[in-house]
Length: 91
Image 1 (tube, helix red, strand yellow):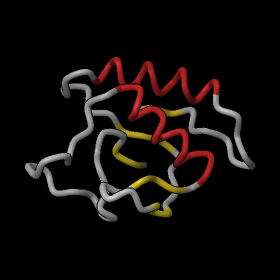
Image 2 (cartoon, one colour):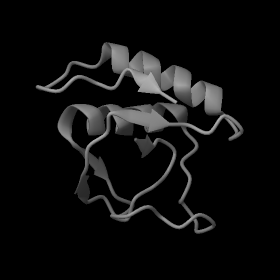
Image 3 (cartoon, helix red, strand yellow):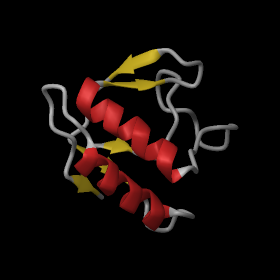
Image 4 (cartoon, one colour):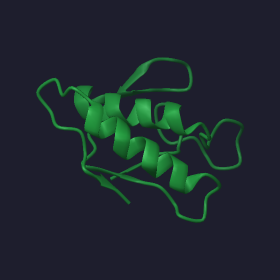
């Protein structure tokens, strides 16, 4: 499971630091689909970080959580997998 709204540098950016939490639902969904289909996520400095995700976590009490989950689900359904299926679980 990967935290959908968290930034990586290449590890998780510490909460409280600028840019640690992502807020744009479309950008979060795009990043998660790339991670699920291609096996990498972009770090804060733009370098690819290899990782694997079977599901994504969105905290329900976070601002915009419902929009993030909806956007992620729609993006996953539209994704054209390159050998890997996008996750079906947004928790």
